[in-house]
Image (cartoon, rainbow, N blue to C red; front, side, top):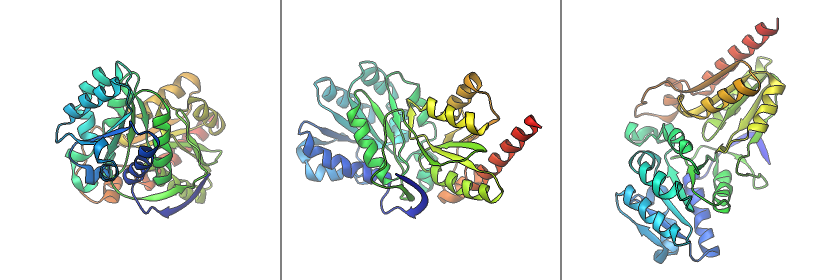
Length: 323
């Protein structure tokens, strides 16, 4: 079950994912976790404290870590490899592609500090190209939970589906929007708010900005439908198409580069299947900078105010089209 009432999250998604990982360790005694020397940041250390014989700190060596993960998986063991998203998707992408995705091995990736959620850590730690690089590789699945409940449940989705799965997690705790009855599936999405005037599709931390924008839009007489596209690859094409056929306009907002993100995928989907007024918000071919998370969202066009403005403009275009 979902609600558009936001409450402050007690823990970040990276910790919720790792806490569920510890619970899974008791279910599968062959399950192993690999870490790239930042276990206290990814919270994978929780697994290491409980199961030290199945926890391997591979050092600051992501290439070697994923090669080791491929070895474990090739011998039939399920493995989670964990690090910061920018190091996973920049340093180790060749190994992930050729040694894990090509043979379709059962390696699950805990990717922390997605997008500008690594705000104060600066550009070197802000993974704003990760969705593009991971979703492009054949056999890779990509998941992005918005809150702790989603992170726990998407851990299970990752483990229940064979082959490599990349889960993008956040640095800080933001808000909670799901309760324990919420359901998640590979290739699914959740409608957080129903509307008739425009569809706003988003994921991860941007869910909260979209929900706030929808409230502001309602004050203007615009009813926005907000969809949490937590499964980026595969994505819920049928559900999103059903929504835009109803609303007649589509806005995608993501904490990622505009190029080659979910916005490009859904823009093509709409153009091919049901053309509607469309826009996507993301980083405009630029690096960000170190600073306060919310100030960065505002500076780079990702805050709720920017979503509200973009949605208002799209609805105006739709109305002009039908005038």
